[in-house]
Amino acid sequence: MKSTVQPSPAAHAVGSAMPLWKPVLFATLAGGMGWGIRGQYGHETGAMIAGLLIGLVLTLLFCPRANSLTVARAVALGTVAIGFGGSMTYGQTVGLTHDAPLIGNWAALRWGMLGLAIKGGLWIGFAGVFFGMGLGGVKYRARELFFLMLGLLALSFVGNWVVNSPFDPANKVLPKIYFSDDWRWEPGALLKPRREVWGGLLFALIGLLGYTLVVRGDTLAHNLGLWAVVGGALGFPLGQCLQAFHAWNPDIFRGGFWVTLGPHMNWWNHMETTFGATMGAVLGLGLWLNRRHIAVSELSNGGNEANTSQALRPAVEWLLLTVHVSLLVTTEFFSVPWVDALYDFGLVLGFIPIIAVAHGGWWPYLLMLPIAALPIVGKTLRQLVYTERGIPLLPGWLIYVVLPLTVTTIAALMFARAAHRDREAHTFLRPTLLLVTWLYFGLNFAFFHFPWPWMPWTARTPNAIVFALCALGLTAAAWQSRRASLPKTSIRTND
Image 1 (spheres, rainbow, N blue to C red):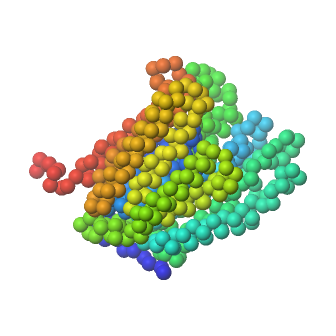
Image 2 (cartoon, rainbow, N blue to C red):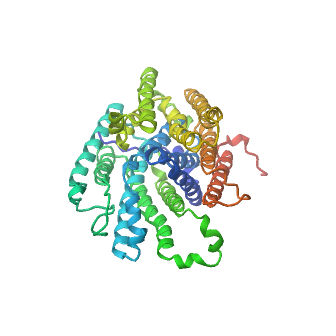
Image 3 (cartoon, rainbow, N blue to C red):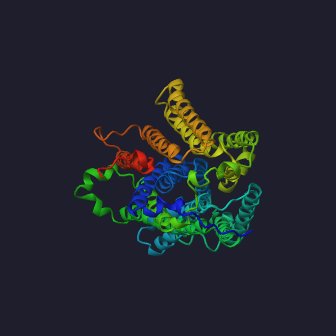
């Protein structure tokens, strides 16, 4: 089954000349904004914002002339996979490094940072592998992906049993390697230990890395997965260093300009933004170093191969879409025990999308646009209309749900139809990057209660400014890529 792909020189025409600073800078902006916004919207589905933005900007830089459907599948695969790690609990792990009772406890600080490195590496690692699977030229069949996902689920159960058991907090019995708060750090405290699942994801990720390299010979997927692990393992502790330093050194923040700025700093959100920026930079670096393994052909070199490899009939695609969206909406916005038990685990949540994206013609575009947006618009509506009651019901539904989903659905259907005519990837990458950048910035800005910098500052204002700068930078990335993707005959020179 092993197959090593030797990409054609044409596949690297853009990537080989790509300066390092571009993928690093723009992936930093995409990851920082995406992961910072994720903090308002939750684990699995919120993380997809960062995966989507990073995937769009990197493919726009490295393969704008490739087949649209091939690139859309790669971006969508990375978007889905970055949600797998959202099943991990990490709040108490962060707490080990900055909670008031543990200030000055260096052992707890080191243990918490180690836990964040492990969880961060696992979280981003899956995204790197699946993103690389979409760009590495190795063809993964639908049946193969079905059994691969089953294998990952089985490995996760084994890993949870081996690493994250026993778990009996009523009798103060916890796993030997446990990164949430426990009585080792606070012997006399009344604690509520959390069940951890990082061991299961560790086993699954190791299995996935081994499969892509040893069985399938997919060098890009394996290498980019390792770089993603490094990005997450660096990003999570580095971001938390900011928050922990603030908690451990309060006197520093009681003088100078901190007297004015300090009350408006949301350190948790700055931690998340730093995490995202760091892992985005490392992913950009990793793809640049492995750019010779990118194996997506230009249209003039067999780009229609992506369309002929489509395995799912439209009727099957729409059936899978109906099932997935129904379960997604139920688990996000309603309380149905059996659905929550089934679909609240990242690997299960991504089971249908991974197969449908890899072998569907409609799914990649629908996943990137309306499906990814659905939980975000719903949570924005729930917060602003139903919880805070800051806007009437009808305008709230129109502005925060109907309009975004209508625009993203129409865009997805247009791009999917165009892909059947063998369009180049930049024809959807640039408008999609602009659309989702400003969509998620706008939704989050509303969630922040519109903290304009010229208005009295709140704890949301500094983060909003950072996200605005990131959005402007991603807009610049979309604009500057226009020249690189134009036909050579249309580029004027003075020669």
